[in-house]
Length: 110
Image (cartoon, rainbow, N blue to C red; front, side, top):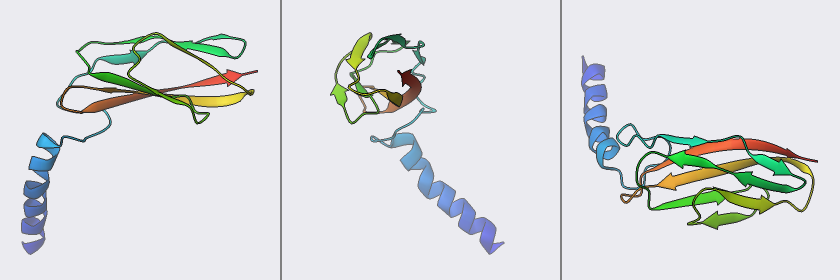
């Protein structure tokens, strides 16, 4: 019985954090971002990523997988890689409460 109470107490303590966390990341259960990425368009070493978000967002942050990062650019956005290789592109959208959702896509630059 004590184990059940401890688990219940921990859940009760975490619930407010989960509901009101202002710095939460990942797909939020409380904000449906309706966020998608289209397959990237690759021309040589230049990649263009397009997509959409179904709710108002404050900013979009891009990590290109080569150490380059851009903030506040909306869709579409292009990036040119210096070297061939496989890169994971991470796109994060943030709402006015700083809740976020992240999508990734991999590109193979020849």
